[in-house]
Image 1 (tube, one colour):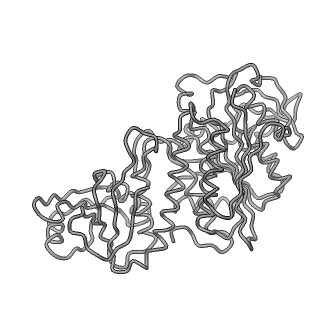
Image 2: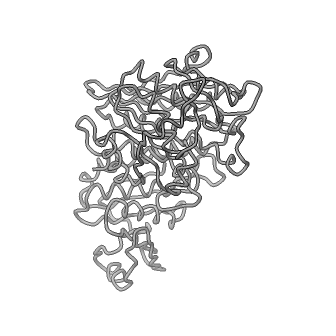
Image 3: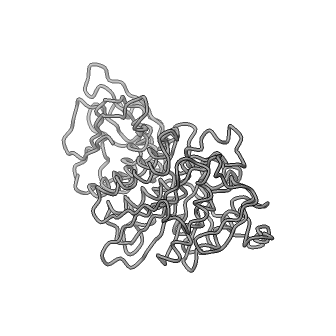
Length: 469
């Protein structure tokens, strides 16, 4: 990540970024006032000043002045700037620290580039000029940790399947946790997975065997235990129920839920949040091979219940089921949240920017929705329509894994059997996990959806402060 720091010293040689509508003294202020810049969120007006310093001023629109507007302004400004350009942002007096945090997030997230892309990662420096740097220090720190989490989730999701298999992905989680005191990671493989029937079935057709990673953050005195479960299919062919070519080409993103969950847990440790968090990451490649599971197979899950496979492209719920049953049996959490690129129905129902949220718990759903709104990730709650449960009936098992009916709801109803006594919520974020083009703080490719929402929500638990507040 490129550096952003606070300063109270003016740098005339840097390119200035000024929030549109701000009062700026001196010659620059007079020129800005005469220009009447566009103040719409994320709109950039360029003021060239040849042979003078600063030689260029970027006027960034913040819209209504909410966090979303400041985030959009930062993303637009960093895209307008050159790769090695030194930038100085003039912070208006008495700006809310949350707004500055959103601006910093926008700069970092809008300036993201995949670490292994042909174009090198941006290396320029950004300085926030303010008369009171200490007032904004904490917000900048939270923004840096949040953006770092999103960068990690994006990097892991963007990694091609020729590199990314279950073993590789588990190793990334171990390596990331090693630099953070208080975090522990365990990875199960081979015979340790004997009870994980769904994970073994889904991963059975690949030459890259499955893994089950568990990341634990357990601060002293924590009174609430949250389990986060992320779908980690490192590539999804659909298995024997093979996907069409166009549906398969982006299936390196099918572990986006695991990436977001892991990143949020790592960031919880970075922020020293006073809540116990356990991330459960079932990792497999759904491939076609001699060991691939078949339509008609009956799978025995961690809890001993059974599922009849009627579609091997409905594999995500099978691996999540094992992780949830493990959590209910071994961890007994207070709250459980699943994050998964689970159904194509997500895009059909809600479009490309919005994740579906399903939960029987109104209080939990409201808190998660509020966290998403503050973090800038769109969420829409859908009903858990119990009458559809009959569609999952099997003649030879406890349930089928794929059935007719509304796809998002059917997947959530399948998972409901495995949550145990915990309060729970489920995110289907298949659509917003990927962006087809740069859009505000999103960059083309993996979005890291979920990391920001989870971190905001975790930051408000057990008396913590909302991240960025």
